[in-house]
Amino acid sequence: MAKPENPERGIAENRRARHDYFIEERLEAGLVLEGWEVKAMRAGRAQVAESYVYIRNNEAFLIGAHIAPLKTASTHKVADPVRTRKLLLNRSELDHLIGAV
Image (cartoon, rainbow, N blue to C red; front, top):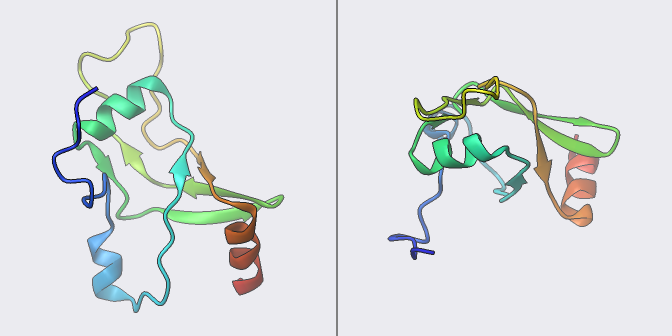
């Protein structure tokens, strides 16, 4: 596996949120993705500008993020670019978010 060129650089960032809002705290979370979504994100085809996090049943979900499928994606799989994706957070981070809301 190839080593990333810049490990500090994230895959997707919401620059508009940094401009419009004061960010008090920053969390890093994983996402539950399908194979075509991983390839598209590595190719830089993710947009999180209009997305938000929704907490339901003690789980966090990313809603509204757009991951455009690649043209070489599988033809037998129907790609939904704006589907709801589950965020992978530690229990303590999730409890902190629930308490903050």
